[in-house]
Image (tube, rainbow, N blue to C red; front, side):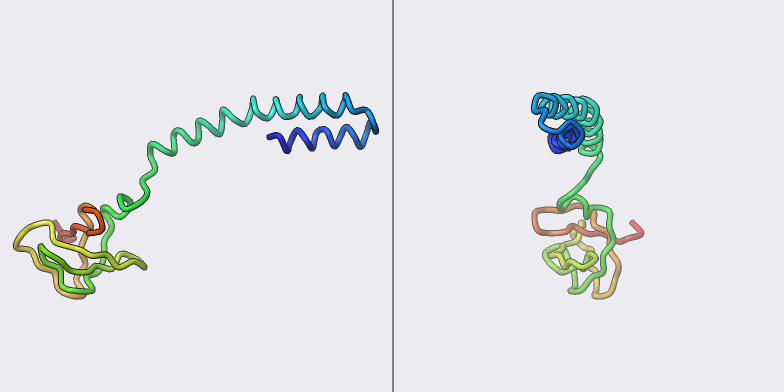
Length: 119
């Protein structure tokens, strides 16, 4: 917004020449106008997006992955897109073999907690 004000001052300098007071006035006027118009819109946009946006490990919850190393309640590996995660099953007796598709139910630190895609 200050760069826009500088462009306003430049435009006045090209038209009016060495009228420094006009250049500074144009800079101040354009900068204030841009701050008054653009800032509230940008702030509203950022506030609404931040409440809806899920990022980090939580973004993986609900995704499906493919088992790359047998997964039981203690350990295993799952491919989630281009990433390979340590994984464990959500329930004690469940076991998933290599090639099965599973759904990420939760993220527990560096471990994806997975369950059957049907359940």
